[in-house]
Length: 141
Picture 1: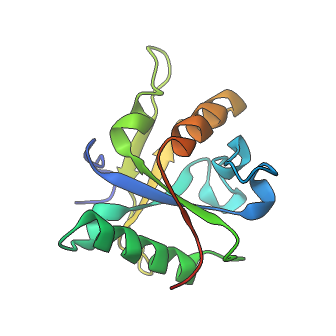
Picture 2: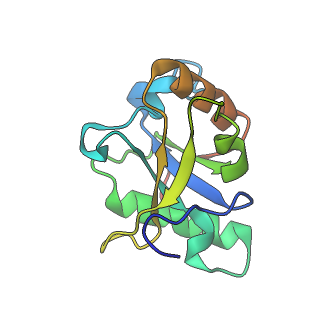
């Protein structure tokens, strides 16, 4: 896949969620999905199936390993949210598009971005979707 291509709807993306942005209950919050200052208005994620492993589980483990090596201030107390792209793109409305696009970088060829999460309401909906998805410990193996 090339830079700017849409990630297939049945694929998944992973997002590191810092413990400082989670609710005291450990649930993910809207703050976990707000674009970070260096994300240029897009929410940075990793395309899980891009790793090409034989199973979803192999790719999920590769995603956690990649994020643990790439995210500044990574903490084992954080969580990794692995979310189906189709569930993210359901946040789109007639007037507002939410999309997941490939955005490979030299250090992370599986890098992707979510566009359209600029406002708090969209981030709150994203947190709801994430909490119903595959949320894992960020603890390194």
